Image 1 (tube, rainbow, N blue to C red):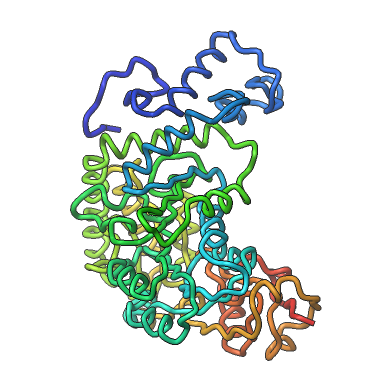
Image 2 (cartoon, rainbow, N blue to C red):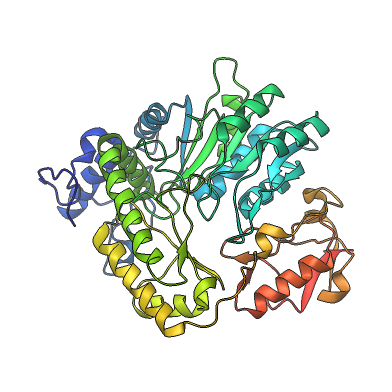
Length: 489
């Protein structure tokens, strides 16, 4: 793969010499050299001790943060320095690297933003991690929903007016939580939301898991903090080339910020492992250095790759892509209704070709294109999609909006109360009118149709059964076959 600016490669483990500016990566490289040279005989965890002759290469490169990249005793100086550099890059004054993905980051921000029993304005299309964050923190949701585009059946953005109305109707609310961009790459007016939240004296907190690359090219949206948000979570393992589970949590806490750094620190540590994977953290540090040095060039290549892919796909009769000013220009979302092809059939073909995609349902295929891609990789994907659509082409059909975007929640009791309440298992039709004790979501995207504490209505049951009948995986439910549901006794 051709890189925008090839650099000398004295160490094959660090071909771009990112370690010059990445203390955790430098620590990982230093320790791995000791392993390679036989100069390391640790008597610490992990138990494999960098040997690959016991369980195989699956543990190759796995180093702990403490007792690996840095000392077990004393302050984690390398980690603190890496987080300081990330805070500077994104314009934050508080930053932590998570090895628990954006899930951990979202839940830490829920714990850090408000106190048990307090209300927060929150987008219903956030990831399940934030809904369970409400359970952990004991917060009461005031739901706001995105608009749904009738032409595609996909969510657009939560209107600023909806957040203003929610804050006016709930003046005791302590924060606004939004997911932006959405799972399908639609983006909202974060600057407008920040203005609305700040006018009410509360912070705007953004789950920006899919937007770690935002802000590093003029044709990309500004990242959430630059748009005025007070905190955000980004996944370094989605659009960026970090290890799985790598995420960054960032906040602005001074001067006179709406979030307290000490409270955020306690909240973060409440769900943080005491044995963080140093390799995951080093990859996060490396991604930060990569963005700082080559963010523009890599984003330029990514933008060109997706633009070329969209153009090629749009040239196929009946095939469309999600595009326009309210869409992440690096997101590749393929719309199938005009072709009559079923998304699961296309997905099966792509898997058989060795090209699994992020998501597929009846009408939509979402392919993750990242900084690791170029026009060559995306061209191969596009040709496979086109060939599959030709094989499975049928009669064009109307767009059907997914249950995750359309079902209206009816909160009957706080999520935490329902989560800990006594529950019983009943046939799904008998659950109608009862209060859900569990979280139920089509996956992907993992956005709940039912959450603990919500009244179960026929629309939700019908939408879930229809999704399951169409081959969608139903996640998190005790009975994924949906013969039964768990309800509050």
